[in-house]
Image 1 (cartoon, helix red, strand yellow):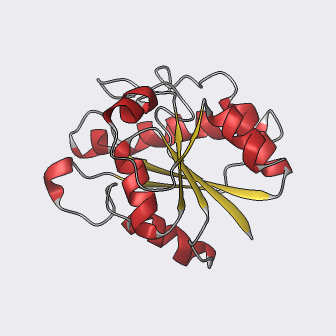
Image 2 (image 1 turned 120 degrees about the vertical axis):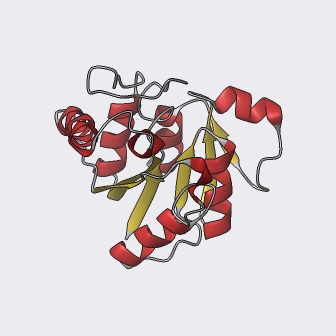
Length: 177
C-alpha cells in the first residue's frame, strides 16, 4: 500500500501564529487540495497527522475541530481526492505526550492502524518538528516551503536526506507522477 502522511497547518491550509480556530479560518493553500487529489488518483492513501494544541488550550472544542476537518474533506472530495484519516494530538507542548510531534507516536499509530511499514514512506511538513517526527519514525522527511517552511529551511538542522519542495503541489508532482 502506498501511503503519504501530511501535516495540516502550513501544508494543506494557511497557518496562523494565533491558531486556526474555526472552519471560517481554515483556508486551503492554492494547489494543496489538487495535490491531495493527485495523490489519491495515483493510488496513495492520504493521512493527515497534525498537532492541535488549541484543543488542550481551550481555544476550540472537538466539534469545531471536526467542522474544520469536514470542510477539508469536502473540499478535497470535490476535486476527486480523498483523505483516508486524520490523526491529531490535542496536547499542549508541555504535556510530555508521545503523540505530539516531534515525537513519532502519531506516525507509529498510523502505521499500526493501516498495517504498513513506515520505512521510506513520505511524510510532508513545514516545520522542523514535522521532519524530526518523520525521521524518528523512519519515514522519508519532506519539507514544503509554505507555512513555516521557509523559516525552517533558513534555520537549518534538517534531518539528513530531507527533500525540499516549493509546496504540496510540487511534492505531489514529484511523488505521484
